[in-house]
Amino acid sequence: MKIKSLTKIALIGLKTNRSRSLLTILGIVIGITAIMMVMSIGQGAQNLILAQMQGLGSKVIAVLPGRQPKGFTDILSIFSDSLKLKDVEALKNKNNVPHLTRIMPIVFGNELTSFGNQTYRATILGVSEYFNEIYNITLEEGEPFSEDDVKSYANVAVIGARIKEQLFGENENALGQKIKIKKQLFRIVGVIGQKGQGTFVNFDDLIIIPYSSAQQNLFGIKYYHRIAIEVDKEENVDVTVEDIKQTLRESHNITDPEKDDFYIQTQKEAIKQTQTVTNALKYFLAAVAAISLIVGGVGIMNIMLVSITERTKEIGLRKAVGATPKEILLQFLFEAIFLTMTGGIIGVIFGATNSLISSLILSKLLSVNWQFTFPFSAMFLGLFTSALIGLIFGLYPARKAAKKSPIESLRYE
Image (tube, rainbow, N blue to C red; front, top):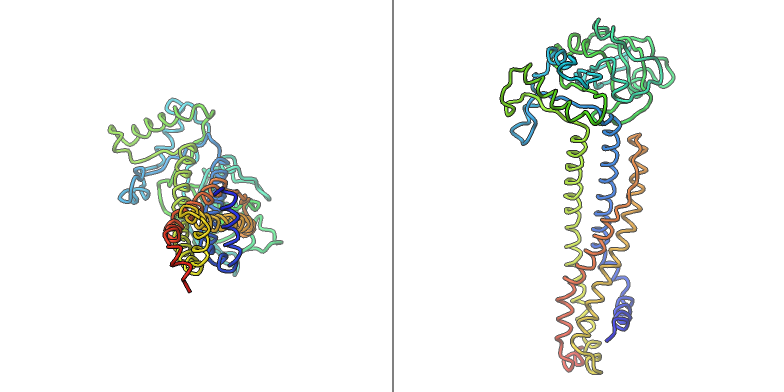
């Protein structure tokens, strides 16, 4: 029998029980919808993170304390205090790191902040006067603090948009006002326009102060949580990384590279690591969502078995007029594949629609440019998987129908 005839007969069989057919494919629809949404939203999140990381510039190198974490046992190394003032001075030396243009020590922490009766727990970021250039920050009001402020341990601050809103209200002037952070008064010299989530912090919830003030007046530490270094040219990043390693090993009296108490991240490495992690998470969640497809496949097999029992006389009549077991098998196999493919197409439409709506909602709630991404790979994978499930789970019922005796089938009541 030709494929066209088999298709026509299969479609007639499905149309006869439309309600049951729709309920049968519900598991497939849910599974494909979930896969589409996971892949689309996951890709959107990955694009957002990578765009923010790239916004820091490909010429920025981060030096972090402790051993580079390679497993759970290394997690405590991130609390190391190995980066200190002598390291910054050594790195500033042009003989050691000739391609360095800017260097910025960084310390950070969370503290309760207050102004009058208003309080808010904010992220405190202690940096140098280069923070607005390295982090690509534009101030909506005021100006950044200066090198003299850093050298004099001045209690000055640049605050994020949400900090201003929470402590002063939307229309109040914050410039020149003094806020209290851990019993210390800091004068506001600048306000960041609404920027949203950055690579490591949310700039709207940020209070930026000189790292010297943060160390001495707030955190009581003499080390840095990380050091940001900007290179003159992108092509000099790799050689600068080696210069930094050599300089810090000499500063720390380290002769064996395996015993480094620091590690270095470039934007290229950070982006690659982020892509690896987000891809692994995205595909893992998609695999979890795909479990519902197996459940849907079992449901289709059960319904097909019930349908074959109900259509026993039809099978007997078709065999009596000359239909071969192979044609009967193909008829019911086509029905199962059509069911799952229909579920797959509906799932793709629902998944894309829900992903678009979710992207718009996330953009609004998080105040970020969350772009909708249509995952063509997930669509093709979903449709292929749907057809495969129809083939696998429809094969047993189809074979059972093909083996029925025409005489016994015609006698079936």
